[in-house]
Every structure is written in C-alpha cells, then in structure tokens.
Length: 120
Image (cartoon, rainbow, N blue to C red; front, side, top):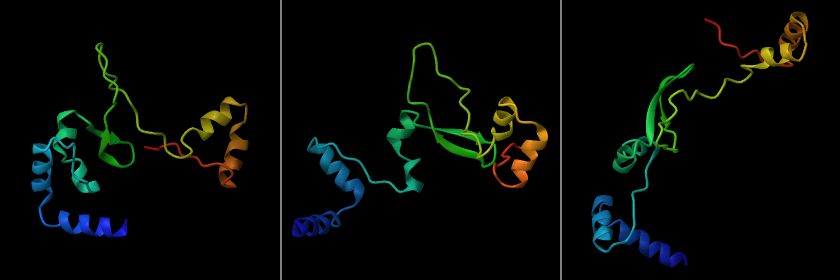
C-alpha cells in the first residue's frame, strides 16, 4: 500500500492541479482541488452557490462566515447573529435565577463566573 501512495504522489507531481482537473473532467471523474484556508474562499463553485457571506462580528469586526445552507421559497433569515462571547449572559441568567447584584459581583470578583457583557 505504501508503494502505491508513493507512485501516485510522484505521478500527481508531474502536472498542475488545473491540468489534473481538466484531465479528470474529460474522463468524467468527479474531482476538486484541495484548498488551504486562504484559497477556500476563492473557490469558484463555492462563490457561485453563495457559500460564504461577509458579516460583522461584535469583537472580531468584518469577517467571512458560512452562509445559511437552507434556502426556502419564502426567503432566508438575514438576522443570524454571531455566537455569544464567553460569559455574555452570565449576569442575565443569574439575575433571572434570583441572585442579587452583590452576589453576582462577588462571583465575578472571585472568578466563579465570567462577566462577558460588552461594554461601550
């Protein structure tokens, strides 16, 4: 098995990715390039199907995200939010459970919880 992979690797080095994709397409063999993280967002097929979208993350700023894969005839939700930051809802949840401000402040100081609320 090891010899097979060595022979195959050597043969694949003889042509460019583009050349191999053309050869395989002519032979009706499904194939695609192996991407790096940098080249993935440049993939022609993914661009055609709207796989990625630009979003503004509350901390990271402008970034590329995967679009919602579900497409419905009545439209697509546009209000999808980024995942909350670590501890973003700690104070809110503890307040709802009946903990007072002093108890919550004590938990934050002792690092029992993380106060991940965003501040202006």
